[in-house]
Length: 463
Image (cartoon, rainbow, N blue to C red; front, side, top):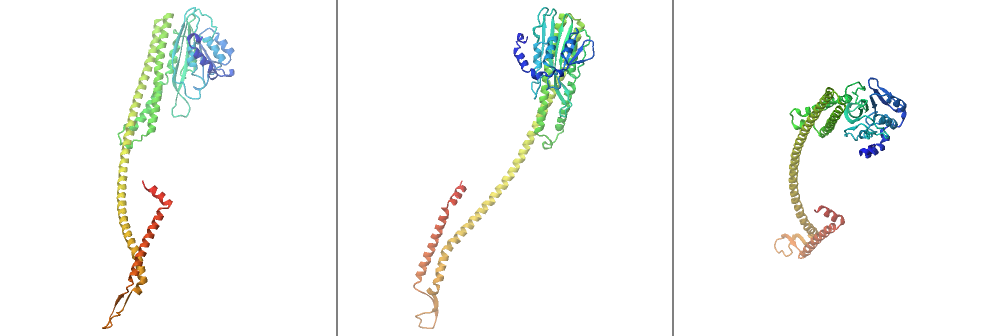
C-alpha cells in the first residue's frame, strides 16, 4: 500500500483527482494489449475482454491513451484497477498519473522522475497499488518513469511543436521471466510490439529511442529561428537603420524560455538513464544474465546518453547565442535611445533659443510699450490741466481780453490789447476746475480697483 511507503499524501491526492483522471463511461474504454510474440495490437473496451486477455501467461504490453495532453485517460477507474492488479503497479507510479488528468491551462509541465522497486523471494510486494495481493514465490523487479518529448501538432499556430508526456511502468517476475509493461500515451515513433529478446528490459531502449526521435529536428527549429534573428543585426548599419524594437526582445525571451524548458527535460532524462542503468545492472546480476547481453544493453544506453549529451550541449549553445543576441539588441536599443535623446536635446536647445529670442522681442516690446505709456501719461496729465484752463479761457475770453483803442489815449487813435482787472476770476476758476478733474479721475480709478472681479484678477496674476 501507498501508506507503507510514506506516500499516503500522494494516494489522497490521487483519490481526489480520480474524476479528472479517468473517463466515466465504460463504453468508451480503450485499452491496447500486445502479447509477446504477437505483432498485432488489440484494443479492448470491456472488463470481461480485459480479464480474459490478461489471464494468458506471457509478457504483455498495455497501452493507455489520451485524446490530447489536456484530456483524461481513456479508461475507467474500474478498468484501471484491473490493470493495477495484473501489472502490480507500484505507488510511485501515482507521481505520474496525477499529472495526466484533465486540464484547462498549462500547469505541472516540469516534473520528471524515475523509481525502481524490488520484492525479494517470499516477500509480499508492498509497493503494489492493489490491496490483498498474494505473496509471490519469485522476486519481482519494478521500474517506472516518465519522459517528456516533442511532437508536431496539426493546429494552425506559429510554433508547430507540442510538449507531450508519456509514462512507463515495467514489472519483471524473475521466476517466470515474464514482463508486464504499462505505457500511458506512448510517443508516435514507439513500435507497439513485444518481441522475444534475451534481455527482459530491451523494450526500454525502444521506448527511449522513440522519446528522442524528434529532438534533433526540434532543436534545429531553434537554430533556424535564431539564425533569422541574427541576420537582422549581422550586417553593420547605423543604429537608426536596424529595425529592432522591444517586441524582438520579447520574442527572444520567449525562445529562451523554451530552450530552458528543453534543457531541463534533457537533464532529467539523463538522470533517468542513470537509474535505468543501475536497475538493469541489479537485474543482470540477480538473474545471471549473459555478460554479452548485459554489456550490449549498457552500451546502447550509453549511446542514448551521448545523444542526449549532444542535445544538452546544443541547447547550451543556443542559449549562449540567445544571450549574445539579447546583448546586441540591448546595445542597439540603448544607443538608438541615446541618439534619439541627443536629437531631442538638440531640438530642445533650438526651441530654447527661439524662446529666448521671443523673450527678447517681448522685452523690447514691453520697453516700447512702457515708453508709449509714459508719453500717454504725460499727455493725459497735460490734458487734465489744459482742457479746464482752455474751457474757462474760451468762456471768458470775450470779456476779459479785447483789442481796441485805449481809454486814456490823447494822441492819435491807436489801438491795443487790453485785459480787465477781473482776470483773476478766470484764473481761479481754471485752477479749481483742473483740481476737480484730477480728483474725480483719481476717485474713479480707485473705485474701479475696489471692484471684486478686479481684486480676483490681481490675485491670480500676482505670483
